[in-house]
Image 1 (tube, one colour):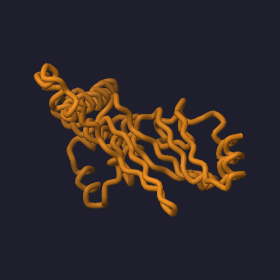
Image 2: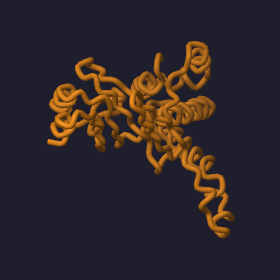
Image 3: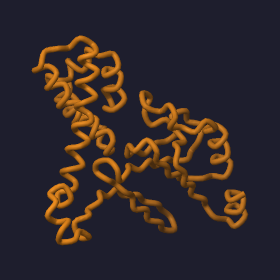
Length: 209
């Protein structure tokens, strides 16, 4: 009804929803993409909806329809609960829509007492460290389950996974050829590939790998 009303008023509609329209990651999409996404894509195409915003997966990403069926572009924003606590600023002009990602900075709003808390005072550093540790834990656990016991190998792989996982969720997962070559040369990369699950995950969180 809302799309029809917009069309009748000769206006372009922008859609906002929580779950995702498209699969933004082949390894992580179960329960994130709408069950009736194909029906919604048909509707969006019929009403010429140019842009849709969603969340849920908490990974910053902008995507077109992987199946090429729907022209609507989907913007998935990160979340305040994970690094870098991002939000998007959308600017509308008569001929253009722009989207710019920003990171939350709570410093100007902290009380004198709160400024004594180093985690709040250096909020971005704190959030990043938490997320790096989460990615490292993923690598440690899965590699040990796959029989990797050498501590040097585990540490190298965990450190790299922490960084790559953080980059994926912040939207910085499109390295150029030179950087991709450097990442693959990291000692931790070969260790991560010893795990079937992590090998697949690498392909999904590092574009071009």
